[in-house]
Length: 88
Image 1 (cartoon, rainbow, N blue to C red):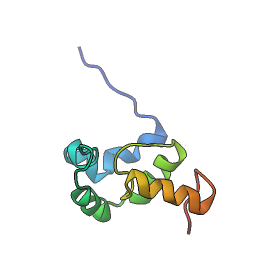
Image 2 (cartoon, rainbow, N blue to C red):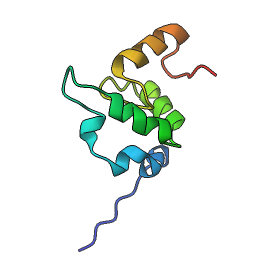
Image 3 (tube, rainbow, N blue to C red):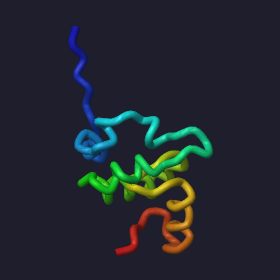
Image 4 (cartoon, one colour):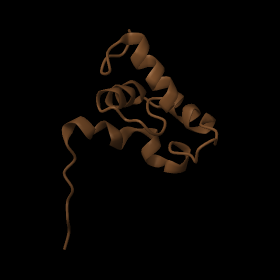
């Protein structure tokens, strides 16, 4: 029996993201571990801005999303005053 999964349109970008082709341990490291490798992968990813916007819109609190750590996203939210907007 074949089961086809249907990906919602707002998540279709994840199929193209480089993180989907690497291990999640880079993007969700143990506390105190480096996120340097995740950020390096994010810098090369064409989906980076979309990923970051998704994380801000959905209040993702853990892991590296769009090249930013939890603390960096929290700072960005405070700076912009808007949880779902990216500064242009």
